[in-house]
View 1: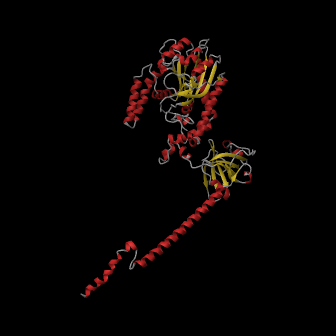
View 2: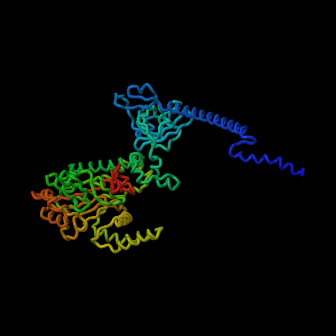
View 3: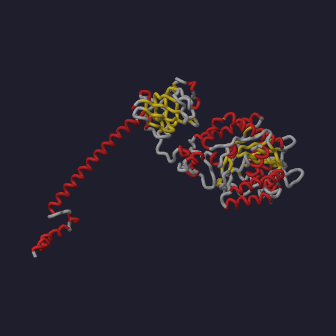
Length: 576
């Protein structure tokens, strides 16, 4: 019995169960005080941490405010070495500005003002900062010394616009990451005139080439829709800056050549009373109590201009096509480079002008825009265009025979290399269609590309003309061939296997013109003023329409026309 006593003494231990609820060991009051002390200590500790965190935040905010720099105007900015300069046209400063792309080692020790974007920045310690400045396709390293000015520069977001005063210096080693690799700029003053907010996409991501992705597949790839939704940022990449300088060059060279050859520039209406090309691919718009159409081409007005005794005319202007096409080369609005001219005996006089025009444009681009072409190549590697002057010229039926003779071998090679059954099926169907291609059947986009490869391999040329198209694939105003009416005096110009120009001799007889229009579903009443233009003495004439964006795309061997349109329009995109 004595041994049983400890069991009785152990019974009070059962009261320890409320521990989980009240936290008391023996008696709830003492345990509660201990819990209160622990809670107080934890609260005190948290308060100290919060205070420390706030103090750090305040310190960083004060530092950031210090590095944000003072707010300045043109009236007082010269009193400060750095700051945020808001330009509201208070006065002219007389600053002499330099061009970043023109600076080189010969400019050593020259002091220069530059306005450029901050391409990127890199701080090194508290007193040194490196900026990469960007101006169109050129980049330059800028070096900033001093704690406050380096802090200000290092705090600038990428893509901010800055005014920089500095002295050109020669670095110890070439700066290979910049186009102006043999120099750098020792910054004396720097002002932010346009601070960037957070970017929707990074320029580094938008500037990568396929070679970059091959090396590191984990890199961010910016898709076409993201680029076009944020086109303002996308257009800042060096390659895009170069593309649109080249686009400007195409228009400049087009205009130069034609003016040298006695052409006159004209401007025709884009709101018209009838479909200029016939067919349903036209935008209808409200026009007061009636309807109007957006011009599918300046075709009719170019011809009317010739009948006013302007013998050679050209225009650079917008073209509208209501085509639900989502291909790599179609848009609903693009820029047309149009010419029209009278000739003496044969419409081939116009072909000779076109041949000379493209030779002038491509030669001029290579001579004047070599820096821009090289800039495009850094992101979009390309094989230089091959062409001769005069260029290769084939009749339509000759081109079809060449396609049927040499095209299948090219497709058979692709068939062997095709990785999927789906792709094999597409190639097989294309091969069958080429073998069965009728002499008068229109040539498809895929046929054009194969023919381009054939001509490149057989003749070593990327520019060529196909003449004498079938009548069923040309507009109502096209002159029939004098020997066989199933053909026409119509032609296309091709570049790297894709059409860039379409043209023809036009019908200049009003009776024939009216009959052809009505036969092709164009009401004569809707184009009566056009028909009337040929009633009072008319000249034989011909011309062509050139797609400007296509010329740029194919010259640079890009894979999508949207890359060469500043703000492209297609059936699904009408903004920005």
